[in-house]
Length: 256
Image (cartoon, rainbow, N blue to C red; front, side, top):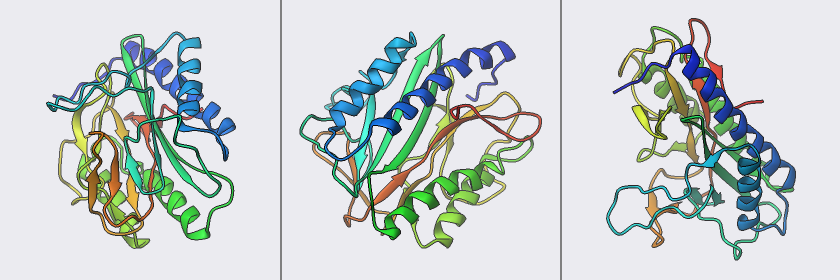
């Protein structure tokens, strides 16, 4: 069921989203060759704790038997890892890597969700373009995140923009509603036909998140039960924000 947030609920949610953005700001300042993804996770945990919030992903149970609870505050996915990479002291970031960091912060009964793909040092132009197109796909999508439009209008705009640039979108994972729960209705695919899905109303809060692959869209799950990688080994990027549907244009809650 889709939940419409009241003005007071939206104000509470803003704080979780603000902290989410603060964490990304700290990660952006500190990410560099030689740092481990474990170190990035420690940075995130520190900022979240200092702001009186909770790392919502830590201990998250996906509901699939045999898969352990997620062990960290962030997902850190490098190069051909699409999403859900588990931070580790053994995973050292190198010059030219791209690192997708996804995190959810919980405070005052509400969640904020955002992902960024960071280019570490100098990377080939085609890799930088992938990251840039993925970010722009988000903004192309939310042009249609307005009162009276449908979820499919967002999905279609993202998919068309990505395809036009010669890339693929991940089909097995999607954006989602967000609020008191990390994942709420509606689902927001990164492809599809316009004019489909529920109609957008003011007070809806959505996590819109293009996940883009340089090569074919096929993906695999690693044995840890969480990490998703591209089947052909091509690079992948991820960009996400929590947005609010208003009477006019959408408001991005996870940007400072």
